[in-house]
Image (cartoon, rainbow, N blue to C red; front, top):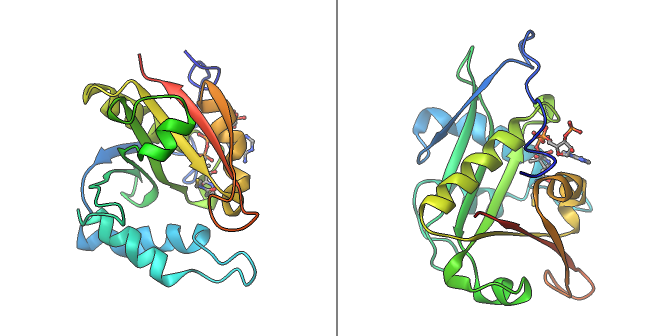
Length: 192
Ligand SMILES: CC(C)(COP(=O)(O)OP(=O)(O)OC[C@H]1O[C@@H](n2cnc3c(N)ncnc32)[C@H](O)[C@@H]1OP(=O)(O)O)[C@@H](O)C(=O)NCCC(=O)NCCS
């Protein structure tokens, strides 16, 4: 068990620190406003800070079971507050790309890739991400995957501490993963 998984997480008592329920499902019409609000906090242009609308639309389409740019169907988990059903986070996974599996020294057929990990700013650092991550790991493991792989670029450098805690091993940088001189950090977690 990782260091992260062994900790006590929830601090119930206030509206922002109440317990969350995690569900695996596609996007429903009634989710869109809350999910879009979470995405608009995080899927932003590095220079302007403005939401990147085409990326947000792409994620929303994947959440409706459309294939992503690599032809993969992603499985999504949504975290909603137990007391008011408000969606405060999401996380997904899909079959790992060959290039990423090769970089992380795993077989692509045995590997899932974590995608779209976002928790609303108002409820970060109280265990929502950890709970979503555990659901992703369990679901991928049930599919027979042996590894969960994570690739994260500099736009999301604030999340790197989460992956350091949640994963077993830092697997180095994928050089120029997101363009010239824009490198991604990678991690690997065993699902066995
Ligand atoms: C990354 C993210 C999903 C984590 O969700 P979260 O609910 O805040 O994480 P948790 O509360 O479950 O954190 C669990 C542990 O991870 C580590 N951790 C989480 N965020 C961290 C951070 N910013 N810096 C260092 N460690 C961090 C800590 O060990 C934490 O335990 P602690 O709070 O007891 O110290 C969330 O912070 C987020 O949405 N970030 C912005 C978007 C983003 O960067 N997404 C990643 C795209 S690749």
